[in-house]
Amino acid sequence: MPITFEGPLGPQTTEDGHIIGGRYSIIVDSNSVFARPDLHSDFAVSVRLAGQWIDGHIRHNTEGRYAIETPKGVYHGYYFEALDGSVCGLCVGMWVRLEI
Image 1 (cartoon, rainbow, N blue to C red):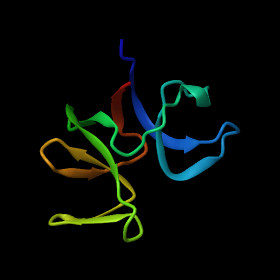
Image 2 (cartoon, rainbow, N blue to C red; image 1 turned 30 degrees about the vertical axis):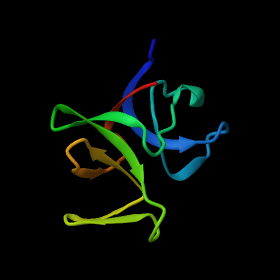
Image 3 (tube, rainbow, N blue to C red; image 1 turned 90 degrees about the horizontal axis):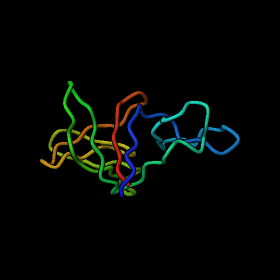
Image 4 (cartoon, rainbow, N blue to C red; image 1 turned 180 degrees about the vertical axis):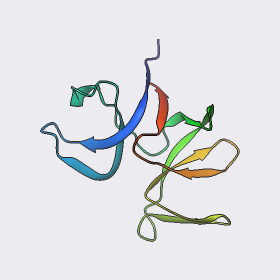
């Protein structure tokens, strides 16, 4: 049976609370680092944008200083790619749902 995590994005941290730059976790329990599933490239997630859940995947490009160039612009680091191919940068505080 899959487990669903839903909550705002926060910075990925080490066990002693240090922030790992450019990586994200879902904050399920703000008092526990262990209740923060880390998001990795190719994870299937849903992101809440404009009041709607949009299905897609977490992506990360390791070429060109973590940038991807699309007709709509350049995206750096981790980003969200919707099933229709549109992209959105990830931001701390965005609501994300992950099933594992």
